[in-house]
Length: 349
Image: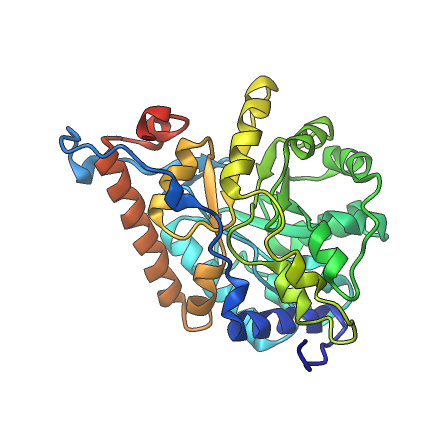
């Protein structure tokens, strides 16, 4: 058990998380199993690599390829502001989407607001706000969610679901009862679409159905395989005498399993929906595999964190690397655009 005594404030928690990620390489789990999916190589792709179209639409805007910089951080402190500014500027420069970390901290620490005031750094691309769904049971409501959207100038609002993290977190909020009804009440009154997201244990089929019933049309499955928030919170349980966070560090559905569970439900819903894959995606090949499995977009967070602490250009370099990998995978599959790639089982061996 770590002897680190964590800051129990919401803002302090953000700094704890970054420190733990930097110190414990075991937080990155590498259990997403994307390597088990084999793709069908085309020696004669009948394409010019330079002609391949990678663009996709998302929340009414155009992205250069199906990438979302997933939620990471935000709060009081120059380092957190710098991380988000670098991410936002890189997202704008490369025409990809970006989501911020939980904005709940804005309502407990006014100094945290500036870390979410990012629209000036990304005037055109997709930005997504973020609030914990469980906070709807703790007094957070339409007013706060709307304010979170307005501060960011957001195109959408993530409601993230993290029951495992809250169960392990020393100061966690654990009343997840009635969230479907609370979300259904919130959705019609928000000025932007709501996106439902897990944080690393996957959305299951019943979760997708509850979300659809609540009026949600955008889902981020966020499966097991990348960063383990259970393991991160294990380090913060300094006053506890158990290994709860380690026991559950690999709990949940992988991103692959969650995508396969979600696809038939969304197809049968007869609603226009968006499916986002995140959790353990670490290369452009993983992005291609996720699109084949039915995703419209793919989210990555951890691969950008160290770059975002260096510079905007370091983040841009990482994004461009992923784009080259993704385009190359499309070329080697003989696939001219993302529409051809999506849900096309012939590409899987």
